[in-house]
Amino acid sequence: MKIIIVGAGDVGHYLCQMMSEDGHSVTLIESDDDRADEIEDNLDVRLIRGSGASAKTLIKAGIADADFLMAMTAHDQLNIVACSLGHKLGAKTVIARVHDQVYTDNSVVNYQRHFNIDILINPEALTAIELAKQVRNPERIAVEDFARGQIELQEVQISSEAKVVGKTLRELNLGSGIKIGYVKRGDNLEVPTANTILSDGDKVTIIGTPEILLKNRYLFSNESLSTPIRVVLNGATETSVSLIRRLSNYRFKLRVIEPDLRKCRDLAEQFPNVTVINGSAASLRLLEEEQIGSADYFISCTKDDEENVMTCLQAKKLGVKNVELVINKPDYEQVIQNISGFLNFAAAASPRRVTVSEIKKYVTDKNFTIVGSLKGGAIVFLELKVSPDSKAAGKKVCDLKLPPACIIAAIVDDSESKVPGAQDIIKTGDRLIIILEKEMVREVANFFV
Image 1 (cartoon, one colour):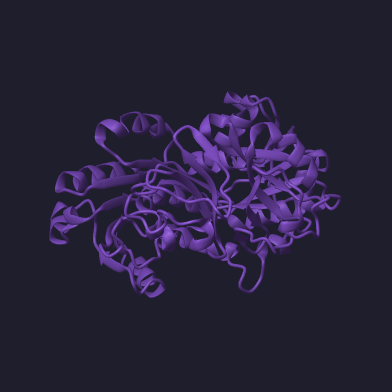
Image 2: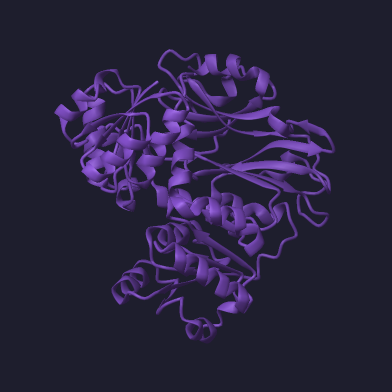
């Protein structure tokens, strides 16, 4: 496939490398001579020196024939302009990297739709999703997220004292926004009906928004919801802000340590329920005074990898149960990943790695994408976009004639993501997450696209 990438920073450089290694024809647009020279010396990609926000530069790169334009610079506005121009000039799919939360806030203007951008990618938000998985689901068996974290799938084991034990799905009346996809009993995996009775030891796949799943987990587990989970974040960064949003529930008691007083004030005004401490987490005295050792989680989210590692080690020594960190430097990624088990880090997330992993889901010459699996790959998660010619367009979910083991787990459009009910209507342009048996993928994909 023909791919144009704008920007050769950490994310753009890694994306060039991965796309080139996967056999795609990659053209890089870069205005910085040093970065351009490094790419030219080390990677097998076509290089154009210039601005990705220039229509002439995009035309020179061959934008009219491009399958993908990916704007990955550190500047949101440049990325948005490049993608908007790219769409106008003929690129089939445009993907913009953005940092500022304002561009994902659709309360006044839908920026994605206004600028004709197919996909907005926020590396900090994706990193926060990875880090929050462990915090939000400490007893989980498995967890997957879709639509960049807006929809979550959890596989949980029903405990003996759970409220769902001995009840049918009809009796549970879970309501909208949450769905049970599969029930696993021993080696058998089945799609439940309204008369399915849930039993102690069953493993169930539940699907919904993170907030709804968190609100309803007491139904499936005897986990105590009265005991708060204490989380300390180091650094008032974009990742920390995304984590705060991700953990905005009464179960989580959040504290943030930040040495910049102005950032402390801004964060305290934005999140009144979060305790903000002005100081350095590198100070052992501060950590002891704030009794950090009693926290359930310490997550270091600064831009300084050395500080992230050292503060996590210090927090672990003081008694914090779980520590997590962000890895920013490419040279450190593999080393820290290799020793994270030895150091007893619960999670180590890299913004560039999670961003490229997310983008690769969309880079395919098929009209659908496999974004996950269950049961060793026998059950897959299919993501596709409903075409104008689809037999499903304009129909209610209950009127679709789909195979019995095929579940529409989520409908994603520009403004929201939701778990559909029987009366929801499938519209042209909707992105669907479908759970189904692997051998039915082509048949089902053809029905929607």
